[in-house]
Amino acid sequence: MADEEISALLGRVALRDRAAFAALYRQTSPKLFGIALRILKDRSEAEEALQEIYVKVWERAERFASGEASPLSWLAAIARNHAIDLLRVRKPVANAIDEAYDLADPAYDPERSAVIRSEGRRIDACMEELEKDRADAVRRAYVEGLSYEELAEMFAVPLNTMRTWLRRSLLKLRECMER
Amino acid sequence: MTTQKPESGDSRRDEVIAGEYVLGVLSAEDRRKVEARMATDRNFAAMVSRWQSNLASLDAAYEPVALPPHVYAAIERRIFDAATDTRPSPGLWNSLALWRSLALASLAAVVVMAGAMAGLFSSAPSGQRLVADLAGQGNAVNLVARFDAASGRLSLTPAAASQAEEKSLELWLIKGDDPPISLGVLPQSGEGGILLAPGMHRQLTPGSTLAVSIEPLGGSPTGAPTGAVIAQGRARSL
Image 1 (cartoon, rainbow over the protein chains, first blue to last red):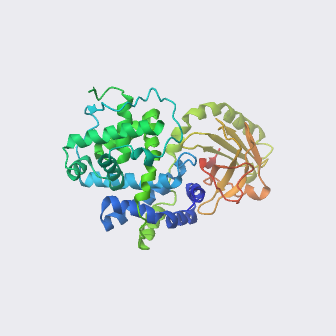
Image 2: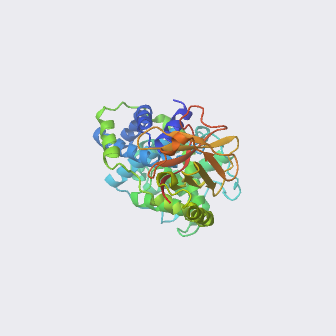
Image 3: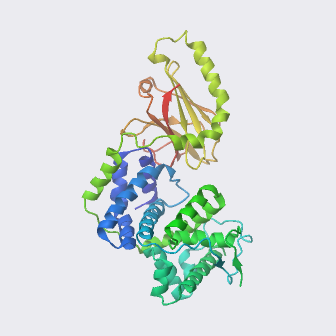
């Protein structure tokens, strides 16, 4: 469905319009449920999560700024973040962001590309520049909400290798998108 | 090989952490740290939202799945049975701190006027004055709306006008669960006032909500809000 239509519904939801909320739910819930189900892999848990997701949508609709993001992406991000939060609580993984990051290699220098371009390249084209298994790891992390531990096991590489793969891939993607 | 210290404000590292957050690979605790930083560090928050929009095309991988009807019923119960007023206003109030000091002077002027005119318009309901603070998350524009029932004038003071090119700001009145009613389009620049139709006077009561949406130039083509709501607030007695 058209972005403008969802934007308009979100605008009305921000004004506490129940009919608009029902319409928004009808139009978008199959997609958001698909997200919750894919990440949580459990139907009743995903149904419960979907309820919480739409409560958040109701509460946060006023924060949606059209023009900034596509409305469906904005909704999808709420759904993904919520499902991933549940997943990480259900099955904790190691904390990492306070440790050292090994980021050698890609030539990305954010200072050099200080001008943020609004569009940049499509992520798909940039994913193709990554080695195939790394692109797969990025995609599976995003789509299925896999942790570093699960990815390492799946690709049969040590945990730290997987971390390095993904972190460098992120820098390569950033560099590619701004090229 | 270079490694960065955790405390160094390394922007490559920040880019990676922002990307990891959006990918979803971080632990629950790390996710909360990232979100806390997003709330205080605009550059970092911008990195996260850039990854968000960059990676959003991967959402195409999610197949829609139909839901049983009882799920929506449960959502409605959660939202609408919880409380009639789902949103207390402290969040709005906090974000208003900045402009409110600016507006204090003009508010004071209104209060003085109200005092001076009390003798002229002493019959209670028609002398009613309301004020509402309207604020949006992105703070593109903040407004204070004042309504004087005696003159039927609703005046608006924008604290910061947005760079709305070829767009209009439209003001809406929302009462309970009713659909929003358009009160009119705000003047394109500076302080704006809208003269309310007499039939509207009774509608504008304490507790009703005023909201401003971004609309095509000239106002919503449909009679209902079509664009983003940039500010809203509840009317209270002055």
